[in-house]
Amino acid sequence: MRIYDVTIAIGAQTPIYAGDPPALVESAKRLAGGDSSNVSKLAFGAHTGTHVDAPNHFIQGTRRVDQLDLNKLIGPCRVVRVADDVQTIEPDHLGDIEGIERVLFKTKNSAFWNESEFHSDFAHLSPAAADALVSNGVKLVGIDYLSIEPQGPEKEGYPTHKTLLGAKIVIIEGLDLKDVQPGPYDLACGAIKFEGGDGAPARVFLIER
Image (cartoon, rainbow, N blue to C red):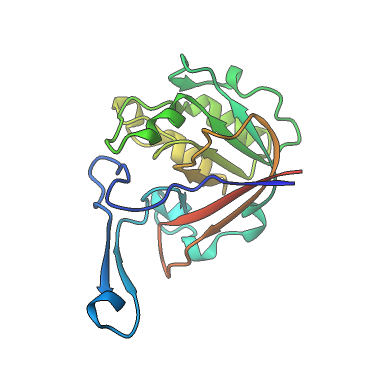
């Protein structure tokens, strides 16, 4: 058995989605400064690094992050490799996902984690592919950058997010899949439990049997 930590560490060098709050990790108390213990102070947006989107992120009045179905966050999954020349993931790129409840997309985005700057040209999921995932009964979808939807005009109305979240599909964004090969794994995702949150940073593991 091998365990992969596919979580992006949060710090000053963490790429941040354009317009989101910057990440701050600093010392509030330090043993080296004469304090009784080391205590860190954290400040960042709910959608920083590896994180989960709750339906309330884009659909008012729906489930918040503390109300997510935990059964969707743990269980078998498949990592699907998408070619580096693919910018928009369409239904033809999904492969055979019949009976697969959790799908993670490994794309050209995985190389972006080597840099601290935000890349706006990340690979993303089309609304048609989102519809196909819903039709196949998928419960969770993940991707290896900070959004599953493009930053350009195609995202107007956020159709991909709303299709997935409206079907109660959990979205994980910001996965670090660069060291993970395509294939079957067991997924364990633990999102921070915020009262009323629209999303939350998460620690995510893939287990290869």
